[in-house]
Length: 423
View 1 (cartoon, helix red, strand yellow):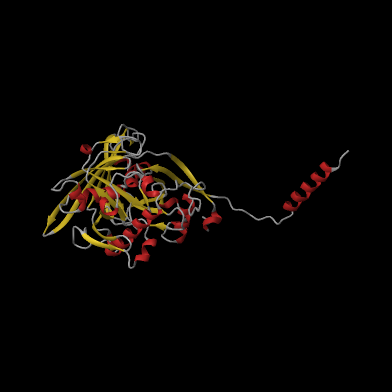
View 2 (view 1 turned 90 degrees about the horizontal axis):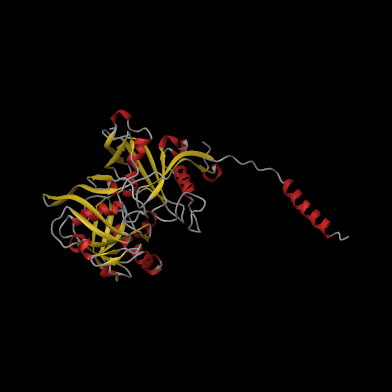
């Protein structure tokens, strides 16, 4: 009989024997951190209580950033986030940290981290308006609100301190039988299932803290921005909700009805928008030099606008020109957003309320307290209260409706050796 099988078996034995003979390398178990995975409608993120994080990650710094990047699965050169909780888009690569409020009269502090997909970077420079929606329900469900304060049925206003930008957000959460109501029939374009409606009030959304400045950083409703390789553009630069640069779609070769594929598959277009963003950030005083824009990816946003026309959404829904006041398309983390960021919606509503801005002009001009705009996934209405005092425009409040529903809660696991955290 042939001896080949025996030889093959012997060879395999030697290989396995060699592997077993190697010195054993100890491996520590993964960290297990309580968390919730929650959408705040057109975005979703991983929510943590500050006290549940490892001690070294309870303060700002490299340990916290490393932990959140590993939770999301970044940096990922493959752009998939298969080894993390992220979704490989700007809308789904987010983390939120909630703690007892440090501010008088507030219920919780809310800190937001935008995790880069392909680079080792967490941007703390702004807020996520969509995830702000989920902060209220999280605060109630996780014991930050005294149960005695909650109605058995009705609305409860959670007063949130947005720690990134130093602003107040009031989240009106529906309560049924003493608990957060998550299900309902409120529908939002860009989200495929209905849920309970949550109303957000962004109080005094202008003035982004230390580095934002006034509502209009230059003092002008419109400015000219000279962008190398693009040309001289007329823009509106505003600090409301989030620093945003608005430009007319036709000035950069677009109609304003574009969907994601028209922009995100065009490397030249993305480079143009990033150049506009960088030069606008410099003019807004958000960075010291154009090169610094790479270290501030989350803000400012760039949006292009156009008067209303008929168009078809990414889901195939037909929107008539008469159903909207204008078109708005916005970029987030270097890509066209599939719908609209909540904070950018605040900027849109605020700019629309102020006669003379590009947004107001595209919407037909005049004074208004609300605007409905078309975005790639459908339409969104946002209201704003703005007034001119002593020649300066002030915005007291911006209002919009969103929804939030917990997808999963339990523990997220993180390899300790990957983040250098032991407890």
